[in-house]
Length: 83
Image 1: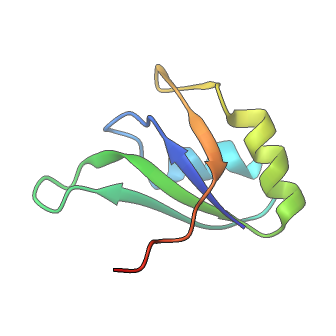
Image 2 (image 1 turned 135 degrees about the horizontal axis):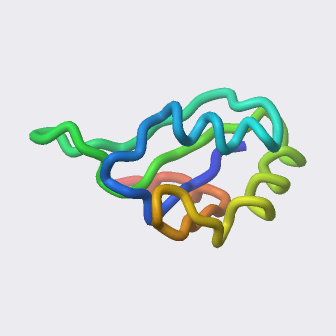
Image 3 (image 1 turned 135 degrees about the vertical axis):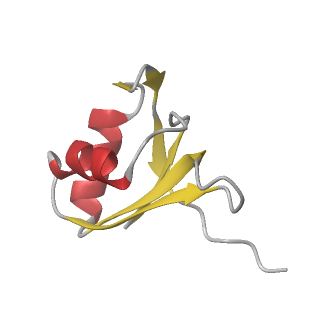
């Protein structure tokens, strides 16, 4: 199950997110979305957990918590709209 993680600090790394989410289960992948020109985090990322139960635990455990002095917004990722 893929999760959206918002309100990230611009210096957040994939490793920072992986460590936070591994407390709730197996992390399949982490993708911090970066600016094409600067390479810095755009303030959001996607984390894929191995099961829906682990993903729900991560949402419950991390939504509204602090990471790098920012309050995280964690929820289920919505499908990318078709163009």
